[in-house]
Image 1 (spheres, helix red, strand yellow):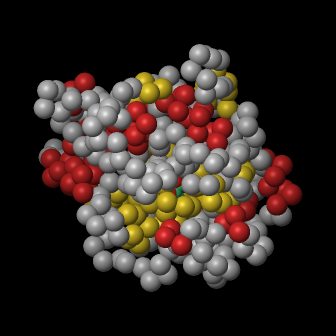
Image 2 (cartoon, protein in one colour):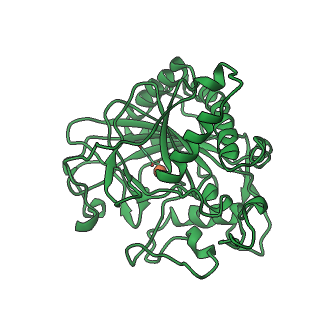
Length: 365
Ligand SMILES: O=C(O)CCC(=O)C(=O)O
Ligand SMILES: [Fe+2]
């Protein structure tokens, strides 16, 4: 990516502090009660509720995803990104089919110091073709596979299968933590889910004090399951005081965060929390988020069981497919206006804008 172009430079108030706050890290949750078919998982459900309410982020261990599957994908990702840019652009994302390689994502209109490779879980993945509410045309996304490394497709597919299992377990725990039946959320994903994985590569950056790997944002999807390598860079905004907290890499754990869709389903009981990625002047970093996302025709709205007279619905419903199509369009041009956000669907009473410009942004598409 060369020297730091001005398009990468964050406004002074959004620049990272290079001394990191690590104290009071995000909760660590042991999922072994699930794999051992323990009859009593109530403590685990309580831990998940506590983590979702207080942090919106947690790490899981004893999660059942084989380490080998993750390591094979991390090495295949490195081999892919190690190639010259001319090779990578052969599988470049385009507007009609946003799968494959991309190196010019912007978050809040500032360019991210990263390159990505996206792969959908369902093949093909169906999505609305246009953000226009009156246009019901559906398009199909197809994965783009490079010639090199030849194993990339197989290791991605294996990893997706394994992480998908973990995603279903987490959905059950989250449902139970909201006092819902354990399978309450599964139907949103069991048919036509639009989930995808992203291989993120953050090259060393000559100005880690000015640029970010991913600018501050919330994930628009339902749930993120993130594998990070041992370099570190992810920071989460602590709910209690707004402080940026460094998420220390812990071998063979996944970082889980609630996305905007769960925020809406839970009628704000669980909030999607802002996070960002710092870069490093000497080391490259890799991470692999799995973005669990429902079928394109899902109407996202507070779950009926969670609203009553004391807790009226805080959002009007919105179409996931139209939301996605709107955000996706904004990835191809630098916007001078704010991106579509869930708070645009908030029922007035409490419309919050945190910094006068935007509250949340990058869909991760
Ligand atoms: O690389 C990371 O640690 C997080 C990336 C992220 O937040 C995203 O891709 O949405
Ligand atoms: Fe994110």
